[in-house]
Structure formats: C-alpha cells, structure tokens
Length: 65
Image (tube, rainbow, N blue to C red; front, top):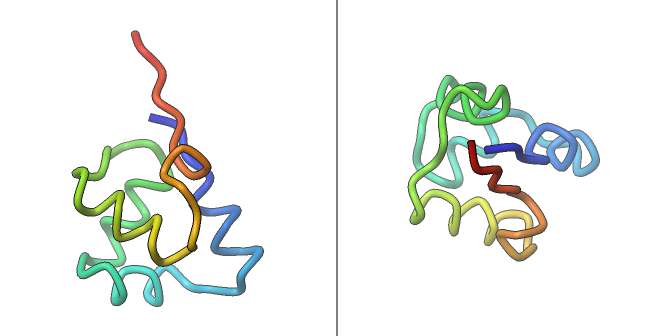
C-alpha cells in the first residue's frame, strides 16, 4: 500500500519517533510503513489519520495486485 506518511511528517516537522509515540507503535514500525514494507492495521491507520487530522484516503492509497 502506498502512503504519504514521510511527506506529511516532513511537511509538519515531525520525526518518526513523534508519530510512533502518538499512535503507540515503535519507530521501526513507522519506518516500515513509510517504506511500504508493512501495511498498518485499521486501528493504526485511524490513529495516523487522527494525528495528521486528515482522512485515511489522503494518507494511504490501496493498490491491488
């Protein structure tokens, strides 16, 4: 799943650690999500959405295949 997490963090001057602490995961998990190596659970995606005050669709883009 593609995402805009790294771009959004940079635009808002947040570190991976800042985001990880807010949503309750490790910094390594944020890194893996940003690199597309790990798809977040739905609750985690909602917490990320809440953190950035954006709809999930503005952060994550699901591609089939």
